[in-house]
Image (cartoon, rainbow, N blue to C red; front, side, top):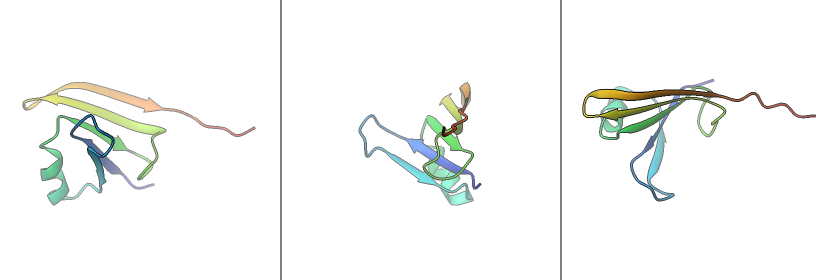
Length: 71
């Protein structure tokens, strides 16, 4: 699996993007106050770490992991 950064910078459906964690993209991500690290790759929201920040301080770290099984 490949780590991706899901950046949300607004409330509308198109106000987000998914980027790989490169130096240039990290500079873009720093402009947002909410990130989701998709641990299993792009579009995979079953294993994430959500970070929220205010200023230069991380205010919330949330881990979401959901095991999905088919019958």
